[in-house]
Length: 145
Ligand SMILES: N[C@@H](CCC(=O)N[C@@H](CS)C(=O)NCC(=O)O)C(=O)O
Image 1 (cartoon, helix red, strand yellow):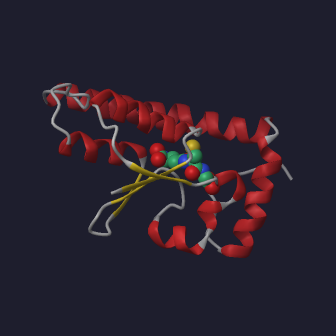
Image 2 (cartoon, protein in one colour):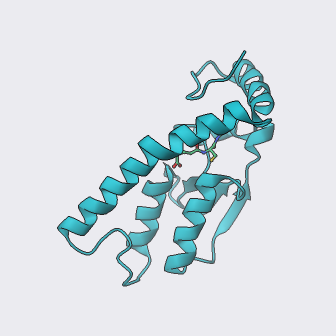
């Protein structure tokens, strides 16, 4: 099993918080530099459905994207009694509810504000340029021209 990540990014920090909490420490990790466009390389694109980090590669060649999906996977394969995804129907529904509220109403907006209001915008343009060369997929981000 191999975790592709850029440890400093928000999504990877979110996943790593969860992994530390349930006691997953022994994991092969591969650092992907998204600011340099490593995630746009064809080899990475072939593995990942969304071209982002984190990405988990299972031993049978299955690839899982999305922080919450990867967290759920580890929660199921790692014996623990923390029930971080809830221990009954209502708790599980509430975890799902808050995850969606935080992601849709919170994180996505914060990502876009960050990209548009900070120097990261310049890098984003570079990444977009690299992306345009390497693939024609539409980006789920925008920037000031
Ligand atoms: N919803 C995804 C978001 C993943 C995401 O946006 N990752 C960022 C780093 S925080 C990324 O890989 N960005 C690279 C890009 O957009 O090119 C998740 O939770 O895993």
